Amino acid sequence: MPIAKGSGALFVVFEGPDGSGKTTQTMLLRDALQKAGHAVLATREPGGTSIGEQIRTVVHAVENGSMLPLTEALLYSAARAQLVGEVIRPALAEGRFVISDRYAYSTIAYQGEGRGLDRHMLQQLTRWATQDLVPDVVVYLDLDVQEGLRRKQQALDQGGEINRMDQQTVDFYRSVRNSYLQMAREDADRWLVVEACQPVEAIHARVLSHLSELCERRRRRVQGG
Ligand code: TYD
Image (cartoon, rainbow, N blue to C red; front, side, top):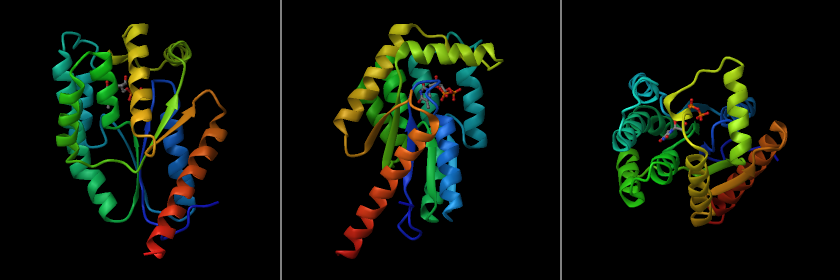
């Protein structure tokens, strides 16, 4: 079922480990929505604004190995504050679909469970940075940790760039995955967990059908008063 025009825009976030295919799915969804006649903004974290891309360079620079977890959390959050204020909120106000490759959940997973920062403090920080902007849907592309590392290594072997966050232990990535799965359980209505080892097209179709059901439910609610 296609997503009908005039069914109202959604804010959709893709989360998942490196190598899970978030960027591919972001682009496929953007193209599908545009083809159906919707106005769409696709963005990514950290980045998506000129200031955010500058922060990305600092936070990901391999030579910044001495960066403290707290500094890391604040920098990701600063980039996010700029992205939400400068790009995401205005796009939603114009009625555009917004798709983001990562969002605040990355901070909870990587800096929280991964780095060991206090989850409650991080939730407050991310709420402040986003001014309470919560997506309609979080698509979590779930991938076995070893498979994620294998895919990452393959990308590096093919000339992909290494960043500071790529240099973590297996335990770190396990913690990150557990944190994502916990968030998905705690907020099950918002989260769609998809096995990332499926073919790209199958994942895309699953995401599209989920979004179209959501839009349809919303439309019925509005019509029903
Ligand atoms: P990136 O090169 O964008 O790749 P991908 O998103 O495909 O993994 O790397 C982003 C890295 O930044 C990734 O390792 C996760 C990390 N990250 C955090 O640790 N916290 C955050 O809040 C965000 C947005 C990203």
